[in-house]
Amino acid sequence: MSVKIGVPSKGRLMDKTFEWFAERGITMKRTGAEREYSGAVEGIEGVDLVLLSASEIPRELAAGRIHMGVTGTDLVREKLGDWPSVVEVVAEMGFGHADLIIAVPDCWVDVETLDDLDAAAAAFRADHGFRLRIATKYHRLVRDHLRAHGVADYQLVDSQGATEGTIRNLTAEAVADITSTGETLRANHLKILEGEPVLRSQATLFASRSALCEGADAEALTALRARLA
Amino acid sequence: MSIVTPAARAEGQRLFGAFQTWGAAPVEAAVLQPAGTLLDLYGEDIRARAYVTQDPVQGEMMLRPDFTVPVVQAHMAGGADPARYCYLGEVFRKQEQGAERASEYLQVGYEVFDRDQPLRADAEVFALFARMLAGKGLRAATGDIGILIAAVRGLPTSDTRKAALMRHLWRPVRFRSLLERFAGRAPLPKGRAALLARMKAGDPVESPAPQIGLRSRAEIETRLARLAEDSATPAIPADVVDALEALVGVADKAPAALSAMRGIAAVMPWITPSLDTFEQRLTVLAAHGVDVAGLDFEASYGRTTLEYYDGFVFGFFAETRPDLPPVASGGRYDALTQVLGQGRSIPAVGGVIRPALLVELEGGQ
Image (cartoon, chains in turn green, orange):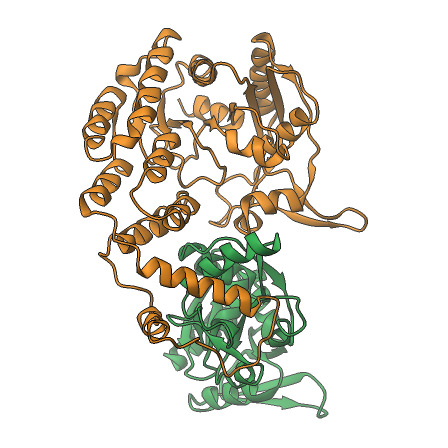
């Protein structure tokens, strides 16, 4: 056995994660052929690298199949119910910043805030006979946010990609999505509602509260935590 | 996560039998309910509470989150008038806060559809529940959403503002912030003042951005006109707003609550008929053997539940176990029958008991 750390398997998130660990004297690298998902950890004993899709890391942490994992705050909060009882935040890593926001067509000159969105939703339902549709893949987070702000008469429609296009395609009236620069939103003639975003997310190192850890593994995990502190 | 135990089922059967002895006709309801009806009634929040599943032919379905909707539908489709129904079965509710609360449990319920004497029906249901739950160490709490509805309907302000408040009656935080704004005591939402200034200067407030999506320019202009009209609406007088905020905060034994609300009616005389109804109900409850002097009343009771009750509401709680949900709850839901009856409606009142909680309480004693 060994202590397992789940890390996003590709792209900028993986590179930045490797840099972050390197700054703490832990070298992570991919091994084998270019497209092979295997990796190695040097500079500390008894720790294994598991390369995973960032979106699967919350589930693996919850199941206790990995001891630690790097993923976005957004994914943990969306996918895990009562997340603080399932995972522990070890460190916010200072990259991968993105906000989960709600956006509406730029041409909606009467809508700037959630308050306006609520009023527009009431009128929309009366005019069209169905609830105003918000396209998103972050159902739990968006629903909780809208409930907390007293927005009614909306419905969430699932969109796993190209969410900004749903309004033009007439399958939604508004969107809730992750953005870092807002460029895609502007290109699709959408504007972000005023006020706090639904969530501010960044790459975060989480520890599973349920992963088994005994004997040599416990020692390795303690050593790893000491290095990251 | 807990399963329905044999003891809970036996207790459920006992209560179900008692309701039938009382004259209620037993009814069944499908476990799989069409999601559309429930979503239309309750909105997106129901998705956070109910299990949704997909049927290849029937589309989106929900595991029955309550019996009220299917029982009302069955009644509206051709029940006797008046009618009394009872039912026993599992309901399914997602529980977000860990797994301490059951997500699958039995409900045994009793519903009365009677258009002649609504107060008698209110009292009949409450008194029946109180008798069936007597000696279990439960505290009853009651409320009357009808008083709040009357308070909002009579406000000296525009229909638009009254409709906005009515729409958020079941969202107390939002209700309060709207009320404060309509009183001129809270700031406008960000950007509103600038928008109003542009309109006042004769700017048609067009957007350089392309018109995309289903919400048309005409709909946007209608809302702009409403905003302009609203900015010209005088503030609701401060004493009225204070009285309404005091009203929603009333919580006392029923007779003291009544006299407090009579005091508030000096500023809001339009709530007097609803208070008369409340007072008559207390008389009828007393005639049904309820100790009204000791009965707790909370004006906001029932405002944060998922169901939309619009009159008398009640719940029974285990005082020694504040961690438990209400052992029983119910109320009047006349508006629901109108929504589900497609034009027809019938006054209705009812409630449910969770037998597993009664069993748990007995075990703990």
